[in-house]
Image 1 (cartoon, chains in turn brown, cyan):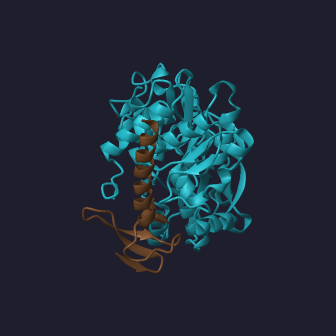
Image 2 (cartoon, helix red, strand yellow):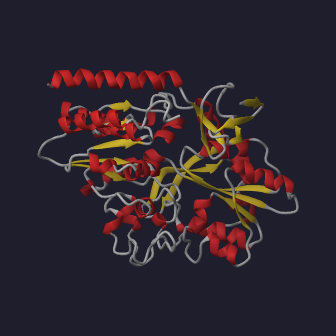
Image 3 (cartoon, chains in turn red, blue):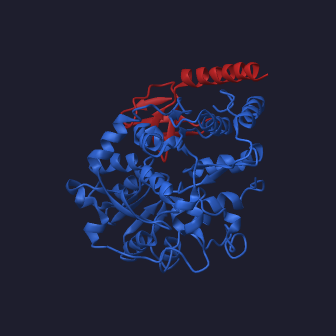
Length: 68
Length: 362
């Protein structure tokens, strides 16, 4: 939501906002972060998440054809 | 977010389980081990064991950072609290048994023990109440250690110190391979520890031990996919290191976090409850930060504690040797309301996870 030095306001969903320490990541406003005990420890790769899922579905569909 | 990415999609789960059945061996038993309390939660909560063929077993290794803190280190925290120092800690740690008492019992006797969400909250408290000494009881694996490092390197106030009990996961995984009759066929490596350390520390498992290893995330689809990837490796007769959790885990991990950990901590040997001493498995503050080391600052050192009470089988649960319901005390003398062993205390403990979920068996 907002980044201010080492602190960022993070939307945890359903209206829950909390200050999170972002020293460990280079997060920009709008990105998803993985938060552990008040510290963002990694940025979630949104594009990768979607691509991986699509890939799995493809692989599974392909292997199904192969198997049958 | 899980909804957005459909990581709990029943149709996808179904097609993965179908594939799992196809690649699973028909006659022999396969045993995979995870080392993460959150994996156990996902597996148990979503009843994933019931979706696997009977001969595919997933066991829980030492994945609960609270459970493996030895009694001696709880005793150190209790001693500090009894000296009048404010102990700040994660909620899970409060009821973990020490040799004589837990921190909760020390609090009941008048000690100032406070639960915090993270170390930053503890530092804030110390800044606000400068007339008191504060110690943060730093428990956790590589996921938590970087936050301790940030605060230790960030010039905390003079009335603040750390009781560091951080432990490292790869040495514990290596230990499991040495437990003769455990006979693990592959590792589901932890997602959020790996978010920090990356994949490199696991390289030795396929290379040296021929052990298939897959880093997996925490949604049910992640775990099922991880198991499928392990089974596939097995069917192909190979042992590789693979990453299922690419949206979070990068090959190099989180370099910034690793650098700060390295700056703040030296790696040393450490005791694990139920396991014993493991070389190069614990962190301690570096010399330069000794002024913030509660053990040095207040001269508190407990060498040996009483880790396992008579009749408690936490030591076997922690290494995945037995399942919680094989312990005679499980849900009889030892319950979430009145835990005897550490595995029943923490929300990440295997016994606690089993106790709070109805569908747990295979």
